[in-house]
Image 1 (cartoon, rainbow, N blue to C red):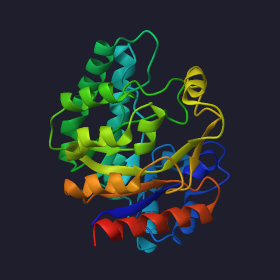
Image 2: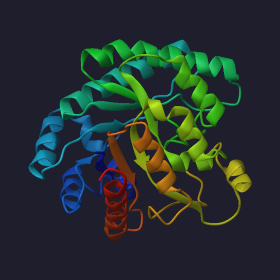
Image 3: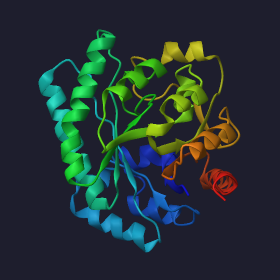
Image 4: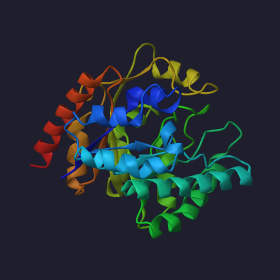
Length: 294
């Protein structure tokens, strides 16, 4: 049966930029949630102090939870080899981080969709960089998970392998026992793709999932396209919604995951309107998991 984790989507600014929330405060808040674990983020300000790693692991365990996966954002599509090598070293550092936190999954991405980058070059650079990290991950028992990503909170350009065809081609390039897919249905919608069509193409490679629901506060997907490059983070019109109330068909999603024998972690990206919203999303997903994995 899949397990549920929570990610502090509502508190990224406080935890990663201005420091107005401590990681311990987030752990205590999340302790009230009926989840099995907390998805971690490499950019929490307090993670810069290595001594905090084991402390936070214990604090989470004291809440009866674990830290299964680490969200981080390597940028492997930069044309400069020295830049990419530094990103590979960062990824290895993040692999060490999740290993010490007690988890087994570490996110990887392709990188930013820079205007000068060709399709062939982007896939090659991303695949080669990920493959260079895999032996290091395998030595530590970590699985690298490639997300069908939209855009990191602190990136200027969207994900290179955002579109379904590019993403699937990149996934197909990499065959390793310590490599899998982190599926995010909302990101497929933002890419203009059908999330169920994407899932059916990659479901046998899915080992973790991000559960979210998105909607556009105003305008159209075409308006979003015009706003997603050249500025840091997400466009203003893009909103995270309560799970089960947005555009995703969770019956179709869970039906396909059940069909392929999925039993991994589902991490909730929600709660931007408060902990009550996050609790409702947890309840919705608990109900769906019980329905499909009775």
